[in-house]
Length: 289
Image (cartoon, rainbow, N blue to C red; front, side, top):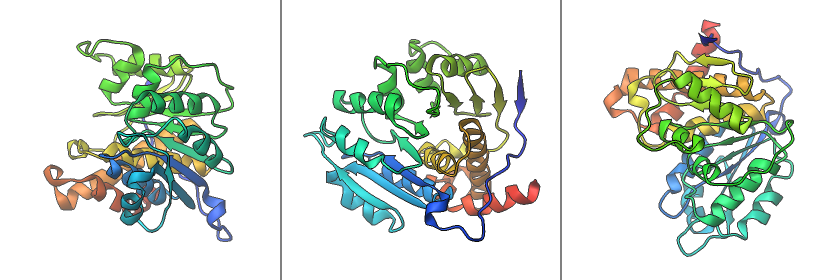
């Protein structure tokens, strides 16, 4: 069965809370020509309500990522000659995960063999909830994955092309039944799957699905999905389970896009406009509930 998603319930912020109360999120993203993806995912996590956000990126783009936003911390990871993560970055990434409440990985990373090895290992072993997006999905699609404990929640956020790769389908095979395709990926990877697009589908491994009612065609713009990755990671870091983090994150992100489109218009919408509208979307969603 599938249903149009109701307005989700978002976690409240207790009056006596502090930075540590609201989750520590690690974002692993970016490469030489894709520093903006790391910036957008980090800002999505901040606007998503995380108390502390750490953006780990190849050391060659650390200064660019740091200059985009002073409110997250940045960490430079070893990189190879093409500006993607080097094999030695795995140990550093594993060390950075200590004490973190959620991981977001994939935007702009590239899919070199070293990067794919890192992604596959973290998918199995990262000891916190994690959301995998963009190049991390392409890496999972070509990796041999060991089994992992069911207590380690995972969220995958593919667009249709990435979903085809995850399922081993040809590039020409149409995704005609979006609900069943999302369910199949959720079962195969034992993860909550967010199949992006008009009427974004959220599916979990037991086969439950919901359709997101917010969003508009203007959100089909570069970087929009990076912001969503950060928002979902923030909700995971706040303690939401994987299904709630996915459904609430998609609803909130889509509503922010709708609010931004009211002033900017769909044709001119940018991912940064979505980020800037997350606060207004939070207020509107709470009022609607």
